[in-house]
Image 1: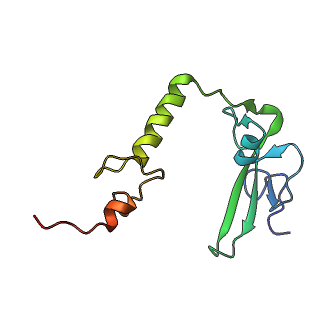
Image 2: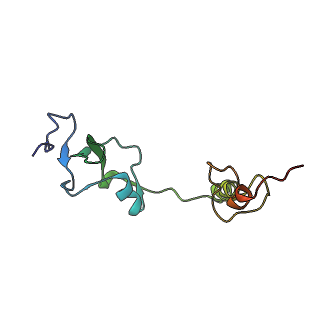
Image 3: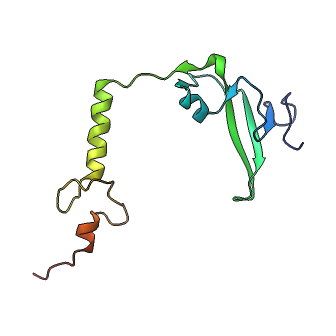
Amino acid sequence: MRFYDPSGARYGIPTFPYKLAPDGYATRRQLRSRGLRPGGQAVAAQLMWRSRRTRGVRVAYLYRLELALPVRPLTAAKRAALAAANSARRTCPACRRDAGYVIPSSLGTCVTCADTPARAA
């Protein structure tokens, strides 16, 4: 196995092939799905595999589950700030209405305003 290095002699940290990580390790996404975060701990191991899409080597870092901490709760101020930011992303700068979706940066306005031909003044 090309990427099997549990001692870390070859790659510097313990390395395992894709989908063959031992129990007790998780990626950031796996931690988040369990309601956890790395909590400042260093990377404990890594997964490596050859990607067919990018034709290179991909890496996913692993963290120890027993050292992971619970996710910090969202405060009222942070919740309000996120709501305001999302509202700003949905508000069309031309017609000032909530489009109900995030305004595409390629258009700069809502689809209705972008499709409306400019009136000759």
